[in-house]
Image (cartoon, rainbow, N blue to C red):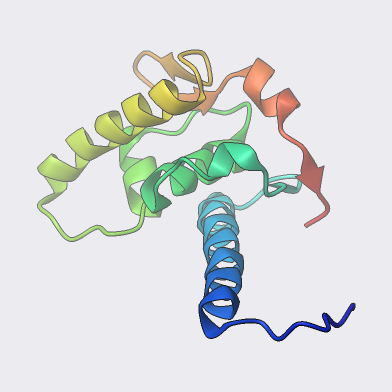
Length: 134
């Protein structure tokens, strides 16, 4: 740890701590999704792709990552997403919206739809994610 000769301003300290908390929150959302799905072979390492995603979107990627290459049904995904406080039917529609947003941000081929089953990460996206040991 290096100690700066210049005293940091409180606003600089708060900004630095806010960045660390945000990064940890992003990783926690992915971990929550992966833990819910149980059985993943590690977790996606924190990276730039996470910064543009909301908590629900990160949780979706974590769920799909943990279950790769198996697809998850909309109802299973719904159980793993944070903020489940609406009527169940409305929430099912929410999964489709979150999937659409993740595709828009990470690429249309990041998540594959399996008709009659649910969603899964594409092989290309799964293999491109850096991992850390769980």
